[in-house]
Length: 240
Image 1 (cartoon, rainbow, N blue to C red):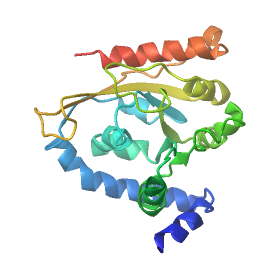
Image 2: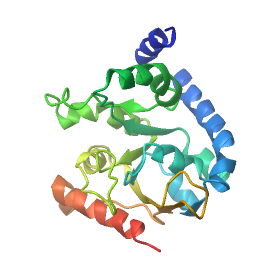
Image 3: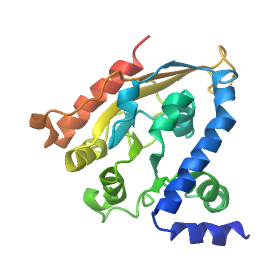
Image 4: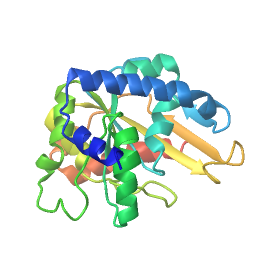
């Protein structure tokens, strides 16, 4: 299968201005492809962020996580005037496939056509990263923040398919503490079957109307800081 060797070549292609331009061009292409369906068939009821907040750098956009397509739902449903200000928007993802077939799909389709052209930072598979420190796990992300990037971060550490917002891991607040990045919270929620047209399937995205910073007296206690950050997302999630 020719795409598998291509995937392995892409893995070793370092971050560069060329890759950054590829990511921006690909994300423009995705927006033009997806915006009309997301505004019509898969309509989202949204509260947009402020222009000045979404243009802030470095920016850590922190959300809950309900579906594997959340990164695209969140970013591609923005109006073009805001979408272009956020580019390139980077994502953080894990690879945790126990089924060999899923691993093949990952290397043939997901990595070369979804992860790599979107500049996704892929964490080590769970179970293989136990020996890594949080500093090592977040190294690429902290480098992105140093380069004044924007990153979409799902603070629950994985999909949370139950109603509400799951407990937050310490990653987001650790990154803020180490890089000084601004945090822009948002919440995404679904009612009914997510892929059905509105109003059979209802989708909501609520962005915060302000940048937040974890207070200095809390930021060194990562568990308390994560709980405070979660409060902001829960507030947005529960808004009617």
